[in-house]
Amino acid sequence: MMSIWHHNLMLSFTPDQMEAFHQFTQELDFEERSFPFPDGSERAVVCTPNQDINFVFTRTEWRDLNEAMGEALKLHEIYKVLYSR
Image (cartoon, rainbow, N blue to C red; front, side):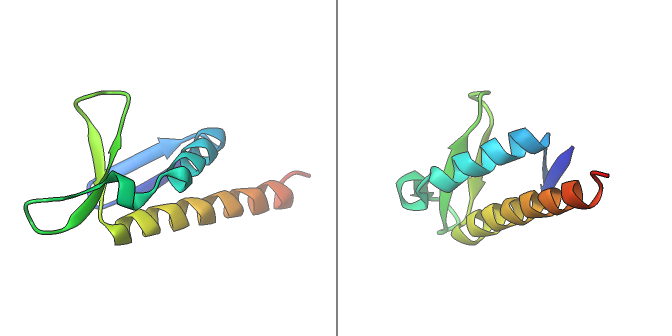
């Protein structure tokens, strides 16, 4: 399993699921998904299969999420090469 953790949110995926979620989020446009929130910040909303649960990200959090997933996937590929003896 691979996990992404930030504050009170932890997402756990198999490597294939992580790759699919990373590709999904890479294809989303922050501007098209963002709305002003009561605290004055713009946040992108990502819906989940459960209509009562949605994720929201500031622009910085969005960038950090995508970078972290990309780095995790690269490290996974390195581990596969190193430990596939």
